[in-house]
Image (cartoon, rainbow, N blue to C red; front, side, top):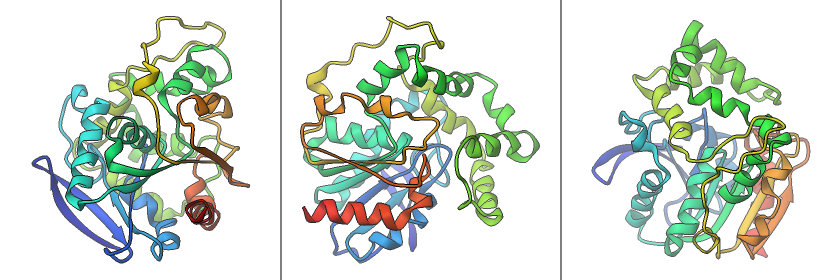
Length: 291
């Protein structure tokens, strides 16, 4: 792995890279509460096929972390990564996990000329996800944590006692045997950078998506025009079915928005499939690319 800083739209971002720079680029976008180093388990298995590029996204790790919720609107997050791709001078394959999936979908939907293929690992397209979260059913119940993370005092709450509550959130209901004490210390070090935790939570606050209370469906949901939310490039969805935060219903109907969709389940995995089963994830990606 090599790491270096680069300017994107005049701001400083940290990039981690694996593999020969002459190989086809794979942009790897992390989610909450991770950072670019989260791809350390998977990238070595892909570095003979791709030049893997994993930024700390806006508000995370050592990258730019502006204050204010408005700086974390999806359009701003997509603009960062569009600038990164423009600097490469060629189209890329994009891999997104968790919140990184939202940016990956944004690139594929709004800047399709930059994206040759889209790979999502336990992440969600906004339309099926909003439909599921608004229904008041199982996904609504599973998503109640979003409202908690949007609370004004959530950063202080999660940072208390050396991030004890954020670590508990990280581990809640998921298999985290891959998360060693040393790795946990690395996460704490990234969370402790000034202003970062507040910035990370602003991704949730800036999202217009609404979460219904269990048993109380919502009808006041954002209008999401289908024609602007289409993924027209080849799309691979990798899924760990033991995920407790994102349920299978959160991707129901995805084919409406991604006509060239391939679904692959990763056995014995949950939300953290890229850590738990990196070889299986890499094999699914390379098999799909070969087809």
